[in-house]
Length: 317
Image (cartoon, rainbow, N blue to C red; front, side, top):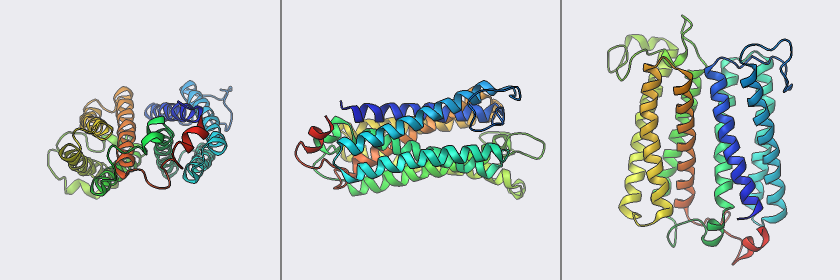
């Protein structure tokens, strides 16, 4: 295992931890517990929840350092232009994310700031997963694919599943950072589950924007589950014996099923922080599994495959 790969894996793990810390900050209403930015130290003005926000900022600083370390190692040791560009994009994105997060705090966390912050966070996490995969020894040895070439049909379905998960994340972030007029969190805009106000389609209540967003979140969960089911079915129909494809496909199926169950439990539990944190963790892992499946199904694409027989491996060593 190369230092580039090790650092990329560590970056990926720390980014997931950062996402969970951010979810916990949101669930506990601690987003403004440290009103000063970019300070990492709770001052006299710190509110309850400051320790959570402080941990979130410290993790963010660690992730930024690791992103720059990955970029430096990629430029020094990896001859593939796409990997160099990917590492620079990740480093630039983490800087933008940090600045944007600071602006969100300074502007007192308007909903659209928070939603965009969450969107960038998941995009960055997807990049870190890709970096960890394409710098791995297995990918360098064989291009990452299980077969002699790409399965374009599977790659299209995997792309659709990944996009659906990402859209679902955005809808969920919009719901999570919104509130019902009586002060309830947006996740409780529809207070019952699996029905919505006792109906399959709450037509009258959909005039409320936050109810419409919450209902869209439930519909998108069904769309995502259907796309994942088709993707996984294709894997097991055509590549059942190919572990690099079958394993992430199985993981993706299980994670999406768990996510649907956790979504219902989140509503029934009144959006308790423990359940919402588990919900955030599972969607992050589902996104990671989907990205891995997408890249492996795409085959050893010219920009991401080893530069030559043993070239990338020797250089990265």
